[in-house]
Amino acid sequence: MLKSLFFRKDNIVLFVILAVSLVTLPQLDSFTSSLDKLNNVKFQYAILALVFSLGTYFMAAATYYFLAIKKIRYFQASIIQFAAMFINRILPAGIGAIGVSFGYLKKMKHSNVQAATVVSLNNLIGFVGNTLIITAVVLITGFSIPKNSIFHANWIYLLIFLPGLLVLLYF
Image (cartoon, rainbow, N blue to C red; front, side, top):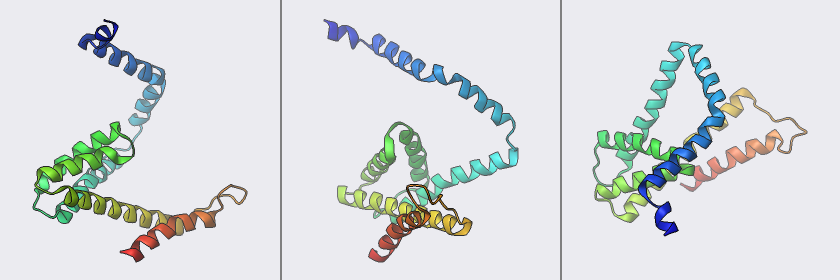
């Protein structure tokens, strides 16, 4: 009886509303300060950030379009990448986007192995691309960590550069 009382639909909705309230109410001050900061944003930079942000999803769709073993539609792949963005907000570490992309490829008649291969290649390309960008920024800006820090800058360079180099040499 207690179990059926808790799992009634209206009680679950009430529980979700309570949980959301407990998370958001303590953060209202930071929300209002964030809104104040939005008033001081330069319009050109906001538009530029929006364009580049949206561009990442179109580029992700293009990557899947070219990597896919069987024909997929670019427009659908773009919509899937936008959906994956929202799922990634819920599930940690990109698992949501991986699952959405895998499911889409399966729906487009890829086998499990083919879909997993395409998703894995996409993630590998993303890893290599991010590693190259981070390495370039570190080398160009001369970013360093203080010598009394646990991680000395040379170790950071090594940790960033080596995985990228190994991936490039392996493939």
